[in-house]
Image (cartoon, rainbow, N blue to C red):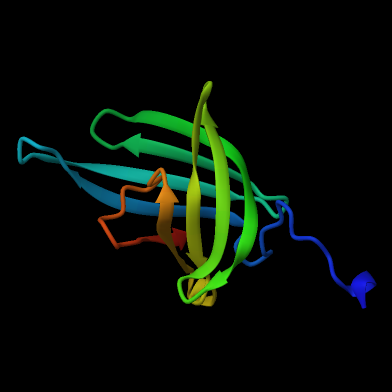
Length: 130
């Protein structure tokens, strides 16, 4: 039986692989807000690339690194991430809910560490396939 078991390591499911996008509205302390767009590329080998673009100034923040599969909960497949922006490491865990990938949607819920997509406390970010 052990020959049938494969370590997941940095693997991502093939139906999650591809390019995704989410429009997010951010509120700031002054009461103002601005629109951001997250472009997410997921590769089957676990590589994740994120471009965070502030729409009004077209200022991208690029983050990339690998995700490791940890298990599954009611939130979806849980991944640990270690992503870099320059030499700054961002670490944490998130859940991918891939239930609606057939309809071109994927939900990401932050669990611990850095909240990569600025989801509200206890919230999530919905991505659409590009």
